[in-house]
Length: 329
Image (cartoon, rainbow, N blue to C red; front, side):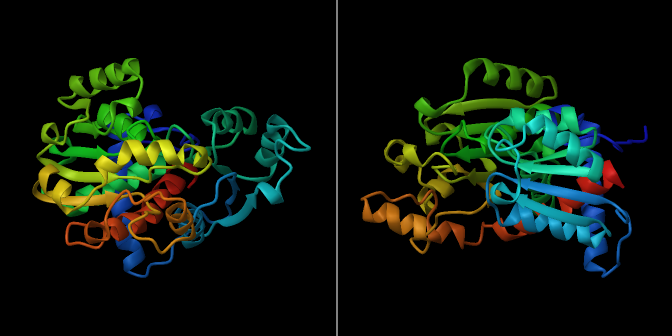
């Protein structure tokens, strides 16, 4: 059956069927080939898109801008300093105004309710560039990267996420497993497991498709992974949790020994970036001066032969382009 996503928003993969996610992945692969062939696109010609950023980013902003420009769209970027949203103007009023100017709105920030309100009041498609509980454009890029590097269908894959298993990336992986029916294991301290009810709900949906969603604090119970994934221990805006998270998560730092224990044949290492894999960032240096080692992954693993993190980062652009062209083009 033909898939038509025109006019819809992209707030979470929960809003999409497995068939629709498959369509977006196929489109992503096609658009990547088109880009590499040097073909100029016109699928978004005449479209205007505004990017609203309450949280800074390198990949999300650049991916949206390049994806839009490649297909002929125009972009306006507004961060907190450039917008009156939630300061002198309500979220609802801002959404209604932007909906009169733009064909689509991207939001990257904190509350999922913000991106939902933008969709409710703007009257145009809204794209979730990241919230505290979801990161759908990232997970789409991760799925695309898996298809490029693993010699098996997604449904046959096993993903192991190491670290803070209730952060937005782990929650996004749970949704992907529930929609596509692969096996997802969250490995980390029990104090940071997601809500039991949510785990049961996602596992029920995954199991109906032959998949699994589960959590463990024992690395010996999480072997055979096709993808070993991790993320930073302290998310933007959660710096007050630094000491607690470093203490809880240091035993789960992804070094070569742990990677080998978790990996099945041909496994890849993935990370949404930015990553603390050395002490060459201002944040890592500041934390080290306070006595905290914030590295969630060692440099050996990050730069090693299993790592596909920069292919993954590039695929943010191709998958975001697929979302924009499918929903706006």
